[in-house]
Structures are given as structure tokens and as C-alpha cells.
Length: 246
Length: 275
Image (cartoon, rainbow over all chains, first blue to last red; front, side, top):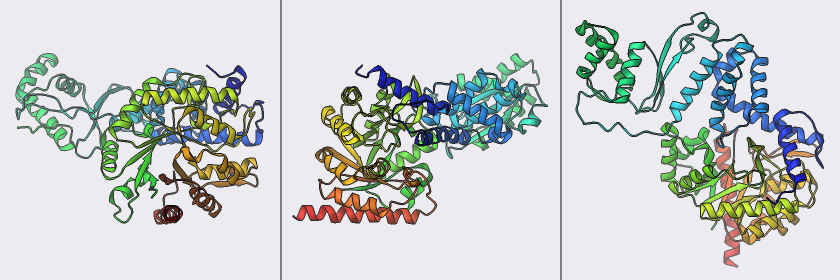
């Protein structure tokens, strides 16, 4: 390390000022001009987060949003060299530091998660198609996806209304291979089980039926089969199911 | 003859891919904004890469930081530069990381001897890892924290001692000369022009009587074109990039600006070649 302590101190002071906005004496630095660094650095981070979380931004008050962004930038050491990944660190910071309780907005963590996962599924690296035997009846799902279990249905209702509907909510978020668009599907626990099974190992509908029947105690196989056919038909229409169904 | 390119950004990606009347010689983008990305934007980038040669202008290397280089990032970067056959990789002579935290903007390094030694050793290390020379850009700066020498001495020493290339940002020279009261042509004359491998041009915004901010959001002004013209006549042809980060509404005006750069470039370097 060639840098002298005084040089490191100057660099640290300038960076610290940019993160906190708290004025401090820095050698040969004009207070009037250095304000532009704080403005530029902070607005870059703030704009990035506002682009990533438009629904959260709209739901929170201006003061609440500004407090989150200020606290995050001041207290959190941003780790990713890619600014587009910063919103994930923001979501984790807000969740870990329990701002949902501070603001009395219990659905906050769920909303941030849903907004981030939409970005994550949209941008995640392309995955290989599942290597399975090319049998027409095997149920192949799009490989870029996330399954979420939420306490509040923030994917259906606005933040305030969602908070009145606490429960077990499941969402299937996937990327359409043809359009590259991201879609959300509100699903049941049974659907989650089905999707998890298929992502473990692509199966046929005939393979699936006895497994689901056993786990969920559903003995009316005809009704179960019709239900799943409807579900898969919907997935096919929406671009989540890549294979054809009988 | 020098090639002229335009910064490739998501907001105007369609112009690069579908506008038949606009064909830059090359495109430039920040690798950090595209690395590790799949889906729609990966397809867009791949289409652009099929159509244009690519240069990359990094944002997060933080060559002037006290802390260690991010070796994981460098490994990914090397792979990315290889995948897209990037001809020039450049970075800023600044720091963007402090106390293990990214700030995502360019902070000025103190113009000091110890900083020169530090940065020279880091550029050499990066060049070894990437197995290529990198180009270092003179950045715009609004304050001179702890400065013990002038900018020209600082930049020249680093480029020469590190044996790297220089990305000469002509607009930054103009902005810094105005903000810090030095002569822009004199600064250019002090630069090791034989080390310049790339030139950037951009617009800026005057925010007060004594301060210009380097925004990349406005049209280039005439004095910057004039400085550009006089600079080209002192050096061999290199690629020239028009940087525009926002205010894309009037794309025709950007195309005109691009055409003006091309015209100046051709005139300056045609004369040199003939003589």
C-alpha cells in the first residue's frame, strides 16, 4: 500500500460526506462545491431505488421513503459493483432493520420482495432447458422463475388493503421464454407442490396424479386430473409450460 | 481515419438496432450495466454486438480506492470483455468505493505522489489480470481534496508510469479548465498524446457563474468542439465517442451532433494524412 494515512483520510472523509450529507472539513475542499457531490451521488442511488420500487415509493409517504433511502445509503455498505443489483441490498436492509414495524406497515417487506423478484426474474441469467427425454407428455416448465410465499397479497391489492388480508399467499413468478416478459400467477399450496415437484424432475400428468393424491388425500382422481389439466392449460397459455399437454 | 461511436443505452437501444439511417462506427457501454444479465436485455445486447464493434467504459473498478481491487469482479469482467470481443476497455481516474462500500459515482483522487504510486501499481495489476492494456480517463472534478500538484502532472505521471493508455475526455478538460481556472489547450499540450487511444466528447451544464457540471445530458457547445478540433490536429487517429446519458427525446439532434463530430474528425485527420 503506497497511500499515506492522510490521503486515505481525505478520501474517506469525502466518501463519508457523500453518504451522510453531514458537512465536515476536508483539506482544500470548498463547502459550496462539495455539495454537488452529495447531490449527484445521492440522487443516483435514490433514482435507482425509485425505478426498482415504484409501487413501494407510491405507497409510502415521502418522509418514510426518504428515511429508508437515507438510512440505507448511510448505514449499509453497498457490495455489488453493479448498481442494478443495489435494490436487492436495499430490500434486505429494510427487512433486516424492521422498518415495516417502525412505519406500522407490515406488508412492506412483502411488497419490496415482490418488486425485487420481478426484476430478478426478468434479468436472471438464461438457464439451460431441462435435459429430459423428449416425450410429448412430460411437463416442462420455463426455467427462469421464483415461487414466493407471502403473508400479504401485495401482488393483488394495494399496500393498505393487502394488510387487512393476512394469510398464506403463494405466487409463481416466471419469465416467458418467447416474450421475455415476467408474469405473476396467484396460486394455491397444491399448485406450489406441483410446481416444486416438476422443477425437481419433469414428470407426466400420469406420474404426478398418484403423488398429489397421496400427499393431499385427494381420492377423486378424475376431478384432480381435470383440475390439473386446467391449471397446466393456463400455464401453457401464459408461457410458463413449455411442453404441450394432452 | 478515426471511427466515431455513440454510447449504447437501454433508452435508445431501438435506434441502434432499427434505425437504418443511423449507423455509428462502434458502440460503447458500461460493462457493469450488462454483466450477469440474461433475458430480454441480454438478447438486445447480443443483437447490438452482432451489428457493431464494442468498446467498454467501466464504472466500478475504483482504481483510486485505498481498499483492495475486487478480484471476483475482475475475473467476471475479463470473461465479459472476451465474450463481446471488446476492443478498448477504459476506466476513470477516480474512486467509487470507500470503506468497503460502493458509492456508484466518481470521486476525485487527491493529486499527490502517494496516490500516483498507488494507482500506477493498481493499473499494472489490472492490466496483468485482464491481459490487456486499459485506457484511463481524465475525469471531471469539482473540488481538489488535499491536492499537492496540478491535474496535468498527476494524469501524465500515472499514464506514463503505469504504461497504460489515456482516454482523453475533451469535454472534461474544458469543464475542469473552467472550474479550476486553467488553460484547456495548455492542459492538452501537457498530456502524453501518443498514449491517447480513445477520445470522449459530451455536453455539460453550467450551474453557476463559476461551476460547470459534467452531465452528459446536453448538446456539446462550440468551445468544446473547437478544443476537440485543435486536439485532433496534434495526434494520430483514434476512436471518438459521443457520450449521452439522458435527454434522448430529440434523437435527431443527437444524430446531428454525431454527424458534426464525424465531420470534424474526418477534416482534422484527412489533412494530417495528406500532409
